[in-house]
Image 1 (cartoon, rainbow, N blue to C red):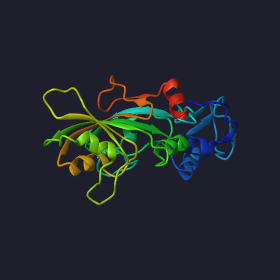
Image 2: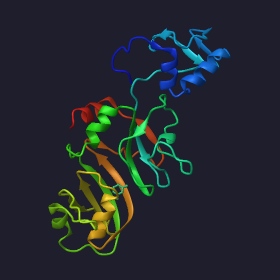
Image 3: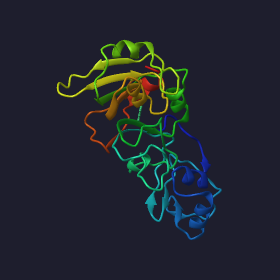
Image 4: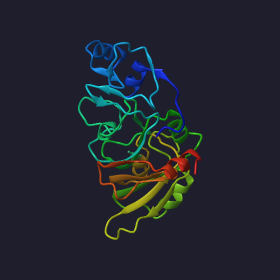
Length: 244
Ligand code: URA
């Protein structure tokens, strides 16, 4: 989703940014004649190309350009939000149609937490959403084991003292309308480590299921099953950028 013309850039930088390998690997591929520009094999990886009008291929496969990419993922349980992991699948690996090699998840979710994850390479937007000074709302559905104290909502609204003595910012707690279970919707404005689980632990309850529903103006598309993703719409992106 390029906003405006990006001008020219070196062929090796273009291919590295699109996740085709390191500059050294790209040089090797070029030497072997695997890289072509507009149908002509190109060995000079330092040459300039226009990513928006030149057609670059690796082994005949077109490499498409995107300056920034933005995806909404419904993170399933069992997937980690780190960019690399030797054991578990990462959230970025689930974005199989990604063009760029430098995507990362905006903020962390625990391995057993489901729900909304924004995946992008836009560092400026990520910084704005994660900055502790911006207090961007994050809303979660939590299913609890144990009984909530009667004054739980009031205590959330005043901020909760966690087991290590730190106090959270005021948060909102409302009952979800799932009749049988102890399900609640909680909105927090910061992102301390395991924050939601620790807030409930401080009230004597255990979170048995946690799902992020929204982050700032961005709401999880309920049409996405766990593990599914889609690009953000233009409107979702504009709203996030505007801090709405
Ligand atoms: N709070 C938690 O405890 N876990 C998460 O994954 C997100 C918020």
